[in-house]
Structure formats: C-alpha cells, structure tokens
Length: 86
Image (cartoon, rainbow, N blue to C red):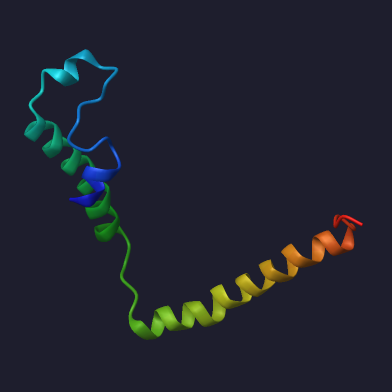
C-alpha cells in the first residue's frame, strides 16, 4: 500500500521508540496498513456515493460559484485596501 510505505515512515521503525525495534518489519507494516485502511473503509461506508449527474450538479451549483467568489475576494481585497506595493 503506497500510503503505508510513504507516509508513516515506511518499512523502518519509529526511531524514538525503543519497543518499535523489537517488532518485526512485516508486523509493523501490517499494523500501518490496518490503521490506514480503517478510516478509508469507514468513510466509504458512512457517506453515500454520488451519481454522475449529482456530482456534475454539485460542481455547477456549489463549487463553481464558490470558486468564483474566492477569486473575486482574493483579487478584490488587496485592491480595496491598497495592499499592493507602490
């Protein structure tokens, strides 16, 4: 699992904990896989999946106006308060 290899230290033990040197690498790796899979499975089970038309509607009705409002805000606030260097 790439998440387990890249994020929580990979195959190597945690250097500050002396007990982590006693646990074999395969067991540490398995524990990290379990801890990274558990939240993923919980989120997949708890939240519904959107259909294609629902996700397109969400993007068109929610995310497009939010992103345009953010562009206006981020560009308008420095101009309004004259935060640009002269």
